[in-house]
Image 1 (cartoon, rainbow, N blue to C red):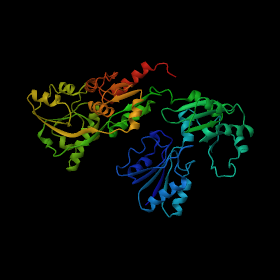
Image 2 (image 1 turned 90 degrees about the vertical axis):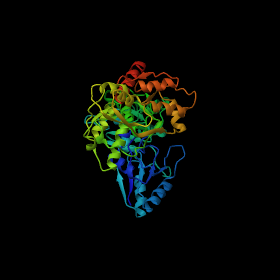
Image 3 (image 1 turned 120 degrees about the vertical axis):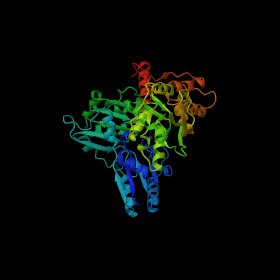
Image 4 (image 1 turned 30 degrees about the vertical axis):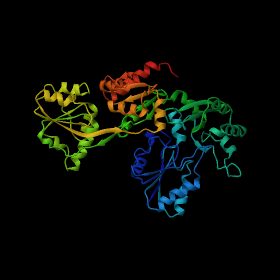
Length: 494
């Protein structure tokens, strides 16, 4: 069996490589570091053994020898092992030492490079580490050498005269000493310098100064690890090439309460807009499709969620069927999200209403002749649609494709939720189960964002008024409404 030394990138989940995601999904054992993306393990198997081996400067750490022994132990046992490391495993990640331990134990291994923070963090700050006119070379330097060494292995005279950009990893605790050594070795005092805290993450922060002043500037602004320091003429380019901080949700924390399996798309959209995303899934989708009715009996099939589409097609596939089973009926989708899910299975919805609620779908079906209809939905859905169709003389069958159940939230998730600027609700069930988790009389200081009137009604039943309701009752509409509200309330923020 092969052990995989995998780079998880600098923090932004979008910078995980396709190979990394593939291996995470297949691994039986994942030994992971502290500085991996928050959602990096979301795709892991339910039965995967997840082992935290994080290290933190000045805090408790698992000794490197213990980590190597752990990886070797699982490798020898023949398990599919991923050693998941922040950044790139071979760039100040001690991946070389772990590879040596595996080779000594006779275990095959593969190295999966990751995006390294020394390049990514400056890029997210608008700083190219090389530039045709400003720097034709870049040196990557560790700010935290092996404390057991009798003396530094760094040649400070050579670094001071290096004709290009210096990028220093793990620099915060020794920033003053590093700057002093470079100055003493002859590097110019007024050389531009920046420190980038939590690079590529939504709360990334950039502190600028010169080689002579950067340590005091960073200290005054309370910069903490993880951080990257950049010394060189390219550092000034960040002022005019910056792009990351100007996004519409930069600095805004937004909680996502929908089911984990569906949350990733919304979370990714919010992160791309600059938000700090708090993932607090209040619900979980549990398929409950038993006997699938003969779809050929119906002239109308109504699907009321993307979740329902996935469960329906999973049920069809288990019976050796596919989209052709729907060929004899008109197919109605409650909104564009459901229609998009159908399209992924090769079905173009015949009816999609302008208002993405049951009442809107009834209106859209007003002139569609219906004799026998199937409403495929969640177990706890409202009866507006089937009752409305029956009132028009149709024979209606209802099949419950799945049920929505509570997803217990950890104390840390609840604490993060309470500290968020906004909390989003994408269904009445997210409202119901989240407030159940919070407890009787609970209130959120955040502004509450509702996807539509049904969800807003659920909030009012809990004694709270939605601050924002999407005009278009889908994820796109929710995001648009949130961005508009932030633009009004946070106008002029730094």
